[in-house]
Structures are given as structure tokens and as C-alpha cells.
Image 1 (cartoon, rainbow, N blue to C red):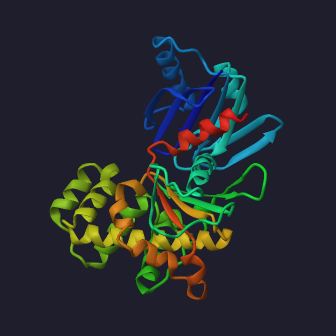
Image 2 (image 1 turned 90 degrees about the horizontal axis):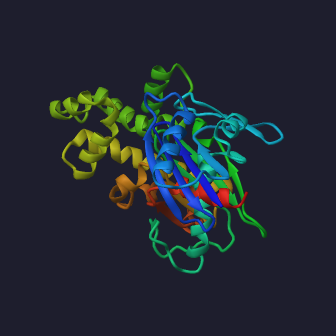
Length: 343
């Protein structure tokens, strides 16, 4: 039996062909810009499979960066939030000849991967896919797990384990109201309200675009002063602006980038703590998404964890919740494959 797994985001799509044991036989990354939709990518993927003498899969699961709707028995639809692609399982099945096609929220897929790793963590072995931010803090065996991750957007999910198979709760928690914690963040909220015409979600801050917005916010405040060389780097390729800010912020080569990245990590830690409290995630909080592995040294410097713990009367409770950064480069794809094997 062959399985197709997909991780369809706002910027890129990962596709992978797996066998029944979960071994990856072939995979490819696609940039979504300029593409018509998922079927466009699948046509190229089928050509790759033919060239390698590989057959077509019998079942498929696609993790998608947006809400999934069950519109009829056996039929689901979704729209990619930051891309405006429309997906329909009936259309995908008919066009590809795959017998079983399922859509899940992208962080549903990530949570499926986390579920597999959490079993190892509870035995005392932390797999290479994870980096603990609070060494020595152990999870409650069988405890609820919270998962969140910033990338093109901000995804959030929970993993409920109360005997039997784990239950994954996908959410659109990244779109809840941004909650400022000090005078600077109140200014930031007003800055973003003017920019977006009202509502400001956590995703407007905790995402690639959010990191760029933080840079622009501090630039407009005039402290630190923007460096002409950094501005030129960002203007040369605006899509790489967040990467430019991260690089200089990590290296400490630009005060404005460092300030923006520091604030990003503090707000990230605060929202991770919010999610830990909302789900009482004694099984751990897992930080996934494309940004976290790239800024890992800054997440490890203590500011993220300080904000995570800064919950007033519930600081002690949060101090007993372990936090892990997911550094597996294809967590969503791996999770989609796990789910496809279980269809």
C-alpha cells in the first residue's frame, strides 16, 4: 500500500510518498507562488513518480493551513488562509484516482507527529526532533499537550489523551485577539490596528509578516535607528525581510533587528503560556512551525521562558509544564503520513 502525505501552507507545499510501514519513498518541496492550486502540484508530482518507477498512492491526507469543513459524508473542503487556494476532497479524489482523501488542519497534522514523539519523551528519551527549553521539567504521563507554531501564519492545536486513542483538537487560535502586556505592546497594538483597520490577532505578530511588522514598528518609533544597509537588504527582496531580521537579530549585528526579534520571542513565550493555561497542558507545550528552528538560540536565551512563566498566581503551575521546540524539518508532512496510515 502506498500513501500520499501533504503539508500545504501559505508559502510552500511539501508532498511525500510513503509505504505502509511509514518509510518515505520520495518527497518534493514546491513553492506556491504562481501556482493555480494543489492539483497543479500533484500533476508534477505524478510525473516524478512515473520517472522513478513508483506507483500512485491509494490514500492521501493533506494538512492545510486553514479551517477544514465537513460539507457532506466523505466530503471536506478547505481554503488556505494566506493563499486563497480552495480544496475539495471529492474533486481531488476524482482528479487523482486516489480512493481515500482527507483534509486536516495543518496543526492537526503537526499534533499527530507530536503524539508519536511524546510517547518517547514520557519514557525519558527526548528524540532528536525536539529540543527542550526547560531541561529537567518532565511531562505528566498522559497529560494534555498544546502545540503552536509561527510561520507564514500562526497555528495552534491540542492533543487530549485520556485513555484510548489520542484526540486532536485543531483550532484557529492564532486569530484570537492580541493581548498587549506593557506600554510598548499597547503602542504596538495601536500601530497594528491602524495598519489592519481594526482587529489585531496574535498571527499579526507571531508570523513572518509579524516579525517584519515588529521591525517596522520599532523603526517608526525611532529607537533603535534603522540602518541603511539593513533597509536595503529588506527592500531588495521584501519576501526575505523576516529572514534578514532574524539573521541580524541572532548575530547581534543590528540593534533594530535585535530589538524586533527579542520582542517577538517574548510575545511568543507569552502566547505559549496562554495556551498552556487554556488547555492545562501538563503533558507539555510543543513549539513547531518554520520560524522556531531558525531562531532557536534566541528561544533558548531565557526571554521566551520568562514570558511563558509570567502568569501571576499561576507561575508555579506553568513552571511544571515542559516546553519543547520541534526541529524536525517536515513535522507536518510526517504527521499527515501518520494520519494516512490510520485511515
